[in-house]
Image 1: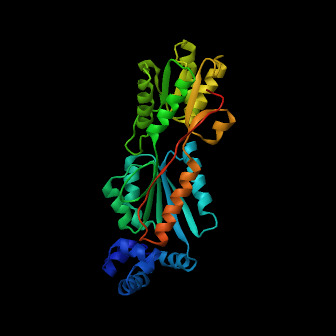
Image 2: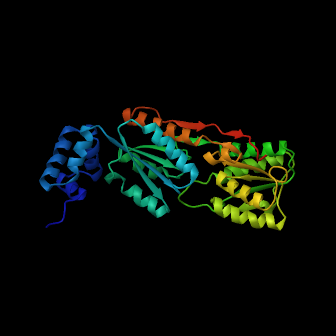
Image 3: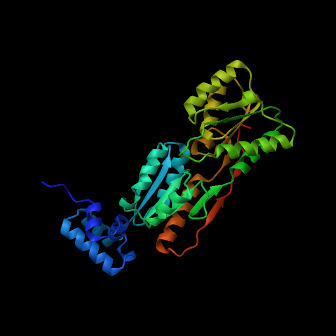
Length: 331
């Protein structure tokens, strides 16, 4: 049995790019009649298999969207994905999920996009260069980016610096005198780094009132509740800790609270804790936190994406969602 024909074989026979082949398969209305017929003839001549699937998808008017993000198991990503799936419910869209673990993996995925048959791509916390964004758009794939701003695509962002400022101002208003900051401070080359802006907003607001963070009160902790718990057990055991900690993610704050409880440290009497995100568990443990509307950001991303898929002439938008201090029992 001979080797099955590939999209590259079709491209060579038809004399068009693989991106054009992909458009014929997934969005035939975007390709002129003569080119479409040339591609379809090459597909039939070679017996290229994806033709049947593409025709079935076209007949039932089903479109395909991919959500791409690092660390998909993080609570914040799960809640954003929940918002996306709720927004797509009842619509004719197939949803794919692609988890990124390295820059190389991200680059390979972008290189394969023209073969994926996508109509839309939603990225979470991924920093794209202008060339990478153009690579997506050149494949006739609509793009929405969450937590990253660009003038070339629809984007949904928040003001991380304001979030840090709100945390500091609240802790100061509660009469706190010494301050700490907990976050994963190691920056990767394949994910955005909102921590820097949150820390900057926090520091600036503290400095405005004459406070500063001691070097040994800046805690570099992996973004994981269990690891934060183990880390802060040792911090609290030492007896050297501030009376207020701003955790750059709620998952850090949950670990801090468990460690404090086990070490006999009263919250908020001995220690006030503020988180960031307002994940589902925050309310259950009474965590004061900075809410960034995770589910809503997913829903907004879908709305922007679907609007552009249905009408490519729609203007590109940068949507900045509000952040809000939610006061509970940990402060």
